[in-house]
Length: 507
Image (cartoon, rainbow, N blue to C red; front, side):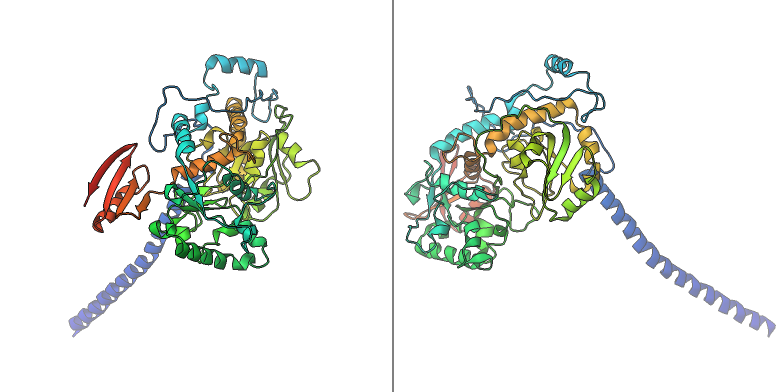
């Protein structure tokens, strides 16, 4: 009897231990899995920050003045000289403990710079491939043709569809400048059959101020406009709008196409609000329009001594600017101002080595153009910004781009830039200024011609001949192989143009 009782007691205790063991295993599982996931997520976040920010590792800024060329490399035997403003020698104050670190005298530095030969002012450094640019630029001027949908002065919306009859001004002048100059240029053709591109001439900025339309009616206007031209003309339908483009600088333009999705997906959008973060903007298909406040002539004292490290002035309309103000409000070397300025805006830009472009409501503002005009090196704090002419110009040769996470480290980053590198940046700023200026009578390589070059790079990859079932595909465009496959599957005749060599084939 006793032995039976002991056996029963042992059995009960064993089962209880097994039950407790299983319970502990389950509890351990539900504790370890979330903890492991949390640690893994934290590690991934830290790795991302370490690769995209200087938060953990601060290195002296080094210029990367070369970049792999985009597209085919074309070498000219005797490339023509590009017209550039002959820059004055920048004056850098030489003093121990100065803004950019210790120097041993400006004269001694210049001698060392000349003898070392490491920082020669080479124009090619401003471009990813200067020779290819100049060669393609010449071809663009010779062959690019654009057809503008015609509208008369008696059109009810002539104020929206025709160029303005005055000189554009203000924050969004780039949109009006481009249309005004384009319609008087040699790129215009009256024959749509020879056009490479078709211009949709509506003005988002003027629609915004038209009491018949306003902000709430822009989407309906664009939808109706596309419907009308697609039924009145055949050009839109043959490519789905892929060889059409429009130009807009106001931020309202990013939602203007919401009721005309084919414009957003197919047409070339030349816009100031060029952010990778926006679903309405497609990099490489679309192009960034520089937002420039028009100014005539040049400042008289670009070669003056610049005593301030960095400067920003603007409204506090974004968390990024709020952070900037919070960190640097009372700093003696980084001047951050909101509201009324005691000295003129131009004077502040001329006195500063670096001028901040900080994301506001949108990634774009006119401050990059302002900085370049006044000879100040742009310091760009705007994540996901597809910078103007980025596939042509090497922005690292004349600006500094900083992640928004690095706002607390601005001074350390800027003081890590050597005096030699700063001089390269500032001299290149004086060279690149010409590409960010508008003229009513366009000047070679100015903002108008640079935008035209961007359009030339994006000219349509698909054209249809109404006379017969033939599609033409230009192999310089991305995605041409996919286009050919689609045409072959539909049984179309097609031919390929590769740099002047015509290869005929058919399915």
